[in-house]
Image (tube, rainbow, N blue to C red):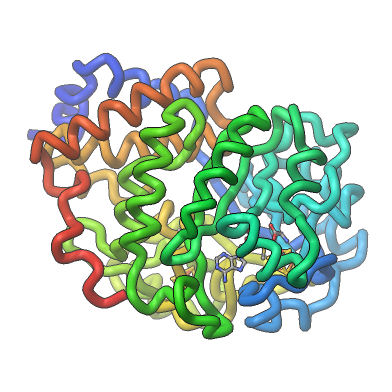
Length: 379
Ligand SMILES: C[S@@+](CC[C@H](N)C(=O)[O-])C[C@H]1O[C@@H](n2cnc3c(N)ncnc32)[C@H](O)[C@@H]1O
Ligand code: SF4
Ligand code: SF4
């Protein structure tokens, strides 16, 4: 059967058809990542930006930024993930990017982000584990950044939470998720790479099974608010997708214009054909968004895994359950980035989670939530 005919068969299911229509209406996303500044008002323990010395590169001047924006627009780029350093320290630069692209700004939440000129952006507010972990790793053992962030973004419909989970999340992390939901916002998760070797429950060495179970439980607890698919939770925490193992050779978030990736781009594995990761100088792109020479076995970055899944639609056509896993992941990602109208997305989200739970129970599909028995090996 042709690809089109196979997809048409799956689209007879109304929820699948809705997700397909919503992602098609959003259009194709051509994304890059930009460190808008090398400066930060925190020094979180294990932050890859400082661990990889990405702040060695100073900020571009205004003319370079203007030229950069023009160049990326002419490449057809329409989406920028703005990281750093701390982007809230540079609202003037955020406005320039927001005029030209759809932007997702990732912030530590310590400062609010003004609305003027930034009305339509999406904001991901970071939090690490439970309050005690966050205070210890990000707040110098004493500052409660989370409380400030809750206040700064209360009722801000541009904001979502981006909670980085250690391998074994403390039980109190549930209260953090509840507080984010009570703040009126969606919640997504990321996974902590223990780059400083802090060990114990923070270490990724023993695998992420407890973190996997935590996210799955949070989806059941707040199906209307958790904007992460069960499938990407499975893929990131297991490091497996359809028999492939995660790593540099399959990572789709490698810069296409970084010379060091030339071999990777020729290895026959998919990659995002427009993606580049730019440091604060906006010069030559570096290898990927989280480093130039970072050890890929420490990388559990959800956004990087997203492109691994995103580029593999055809591999997910073997069954409706597999296709649902793929499409729900893309739909939830698009919704989290504000690329699907909010009302439509929030109506669809709990139905997507309910269906993916049913798929995981019915034994259907080779991709959908079937991999854990062999999965944690090798992390
Ligand atoms: C480098 S920060 C820059 C943006 C902003 N300063 C912030 O903290 O949100 C980008 C993202 O990487 C995450 N991050 C940094 N180091 C990490 C690590 N070792 N493991 C997992 N996520 C990490 C942060 O939590 C944040 O969500
Ligand atoms: S706030 Fe962000 S950039 Fe700054 S140290 Fe923490 S994770 Fe790194
Ligand atoms: S560190 Fe992560 S994002 Fe970077 S190339 Fe390796 S796997 Fe990809």
